[in-house]
Length: 554
Image (spheres, rainbow, N blue to C red):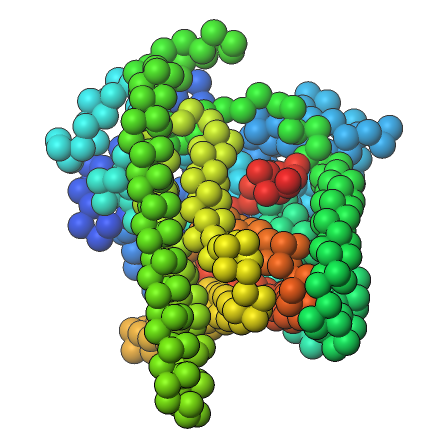
């Protein structure tokens, strides 16, 4: 793949497409010309200094709302320095890349285009596009109602105005085929190709699958010990205490060993050093343009006291209200349990016996629905709080979601264990919640999106066959197919699922030892289903540097 080139008009038609940008079909001509100018302008005048051209069919016709974006090799190297990518130095140490000393880095030569992975190049372009900010523009050309002010993120304003539909990185079909064969193309016991996943999708996704694999292996000891407990000591409460003590020790050791393994991976991938680098404002942050006292650069500013007022007088009360509603739903569930038990004692039929499980199943479904609705509300509130840094934004979002999900999923189990003290009901509720949540997550996150994507793929292929003039470019079809895919929203939901699973196992497997076995089976399925959705169902996500799994690293 040729990424090299010089800043010239001829190079505009020879660069390697890395990112696709799609505008609304009725986008004003002035808007397109202005946006293209800002993307191609040099950095010293506020541009991104990238290449861009319309997506072109084989017959010479151009799609005027889809553009492909790339960059020269020199521009990518300068971008690697700007985003502080870390590479291996000649002496074996990991150092932040600098363009002036590029020859001092291992595996760097002027014609070695593999020095930067495709994922890293796409990440560089993404950062440049998202950091395009208004300078002296007061509005988006062609849209007087879409106001701009100095420091405003241009891409964010284009998105909120409905002008920019999406922008996404392209797949590399050759690399993707090799990855799928080594990942989910083989149905046999084997470790995941973690390095290949990180190379193609980036650090954050590589660390997620490394953690998924690590947790699955770590569950085997507790599953092996839990099986005899399930078979021979079901009602021995003294041995429940021993199993609970083992769970406590196991969970502590598992988390500490993961921190060590995570540090090894992040050092190997060059992100352990990057962790200490200065963090830029997130693209969605907005405010009046001011001077950063630490860097001396112009950037948006927003008073801290305003953010604190929004958090403590709006977000916190709303979260408390949601927690109260969750506990109220829990009490309704217990009333339904009492009704089902009374009905069975009166009727004593197979139907009434089956209905004993009805409240637990219904409650499990309601919990999943409430969790998903609350997630959207939490995202809106966190965005409204206007955090300056992406790490701060993510921390507040995770805190909101964790507090609610922990209460929503575990409050009924704690109530049964310590208030009702009904071990039979606790086992039944735990098994129902665990199994139902795993099935619903697999269906909603993998099976349903896969079926919908297969249907969309057929429609796109049929459209190409009808509109074919002579011979269509495979690249054009690839762009269209990927543009129709759903957007991968990140590892947040995946980590949340593992967090809840870890809670079920570590807190309650002493009364239901099969929980660890169910978790292992779910994780093995998750490896293949997540691989399928990453490679075939969702658009390729932009690579994101990560030195650990963030706030999930307890």
